[in-house]
Image (tube, rainbow, N blue to C red; front, side, top):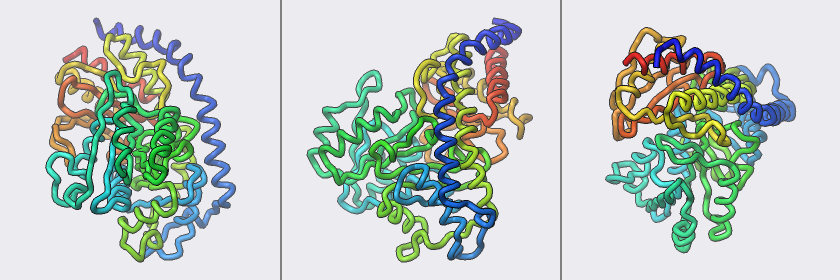
Length: 412
């Protein structure tokens, strides 16, 4: 294939992708309505956009923003803080806040996301991990084809289980992501057997992709990062926890300290960005999805295996492309980096990353470091060498970047 052929292929993909993305319009409209209704109901005012300093006592802007999140996610309480540095941090607050010595944590989708393995201590009970603190862990693998193993879950729930951890996105794998239909069925299955079990969902990459959220479909607790979907591309840091009030408050005590909890936390200079980013999120998430669907069509036309397929329903913004070799993976990431607005002149290289067992390559010429709602690509350097791209505040920028990535693969 010649470089000039990519232009013709891209033009042909445009029409196919346009038909597929038409299903996103009602989702975007409904989520816009939910967010705007929450802003209006909570009477968001200009003074809420100002930040606080020091301890952050009596910060009405912070408390109102958390009410907005709670309203949109249809939950009792929310914790939205710039002091939460990542999605992994938000998830850890929930795990360490809820679980104690003797409790059992159960995962039912196989191996959790790489950074969670160190938190759990799944391999060697690392000091400070859940296992080192006396929490028990059980992992149920998916059946061939990515199906839930209902029989094994039923068997596991015959013993007391304090928490079931679900992961909405596929992570660094090619297993299917967990959509809201499947999640609701899974929540009912669990609650019918153990009503008091806490169902906790890692919601990273999934907010506003569907018309409802996990907490509207049976989950007790969710967590995520503000430099992913709910920050709308404007939040410069931060994360959130949302769900039942008791559980959110347990997470808040891990963030600060028992007796202080959610009552402190200055909002400094990021408050307006948090509000405005959340307001914009239903639109920017749809831009990212348009790019993901177009990219799936494009690389499928080029002969690569893609997950999910272009026609499949979406529940997160991640698109996986099986490139088959380290050389293709490195070339793909060079192309994404080269089409970025920041640091386009540098070349990404694999390197060790905290919390990951393999070297990871990341292409992320973003305005906000590590912002996954901006157009980025990353992958662990391991077979079958799958590139995971996500984000794109503008569909057109994502399209340009993907064409550039394909060009780099052809040039290698």
